[in-house]
Picture 1 (cartoon, helix red, strand yellow):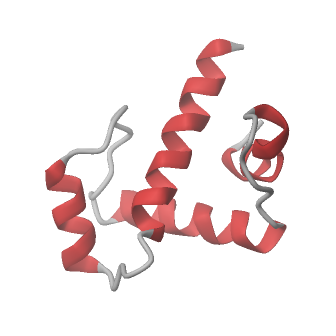
Picture 2 (picture 1 turned 45 degrees about the vertical axis):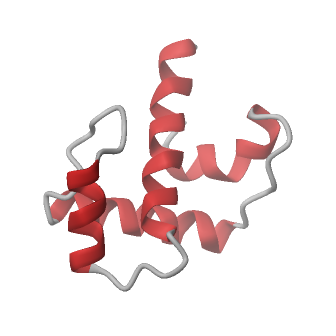
Picture 3 (picture 1 turned 90 degrees about the horizontal axis):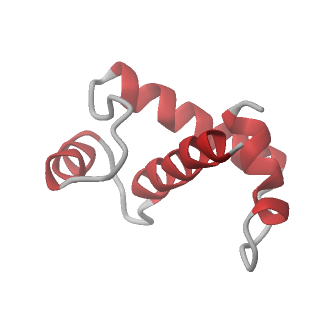
Length: 83
């Protein structure tokens, strides 16, 4: 299962979370890829202040979508290790 598929099925895997539409799943994946390209995120297992600072310098992040993207990706990584 890749990250996009995880996002689409997240509501089935994790209780009490809302469904993520296909378009949003693709957008989350694009945000993740771009943050990796900009060296903001390097597959760490938790968010830290330095990452948040880099996000806020690089993006207009009023809705916290970039932090949420990383939170979802970390959930995805944990899900993969539990299988």
